[in-house]
Image 1 (cartoon, rainbow, N blue to C red):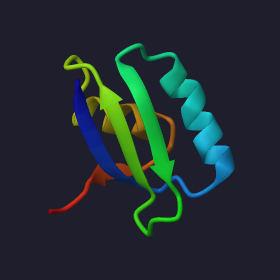
Image 2: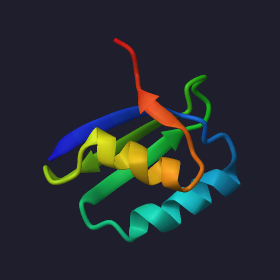
Image 3: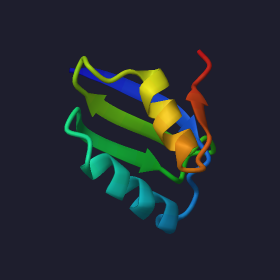
Image 4: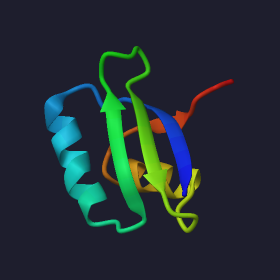
Length: 72
């Protein structure tokens, strides 16, 4: 398992619900959450080794959401 942490533009419950529908279909995602109280709307995913940050970024971009790696 690995942890992916991304900055997103997912700010509403409607956005979270939409993403839930996407993530429920991806078996490599074991657990996830979005911290909408954080200024960066941080998305944390626990995933299998077969899924990586670029995959998640591309998936969300294909559905109109922006996300990127958090700067150190």
